[in-house]
Image (cartoon, rainbow, N blue to C red; front, side):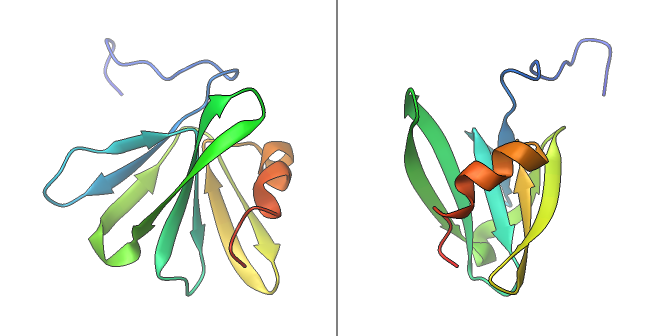
Length: 97
């Protein structure tokens, strides 16, 4: 990270989904699910309300965030980006597994 680059505060974590030929998509939280064909993202549009975004894994080069955690859901390993372990639990029931 350069001196001019900075990450958002803990109150505003983000995740970026990168593509080979396009600019990154920024979401509030992104989830990569083991053996799943989609990267699942959530963007907050209002208090406690989220838009759901899914992107085919075949189009994704990588997902990054300064904050991430891993957990297991229905026997599949899930990595959540842009969230802490406690925050990831609030999204677990919204994931398609």
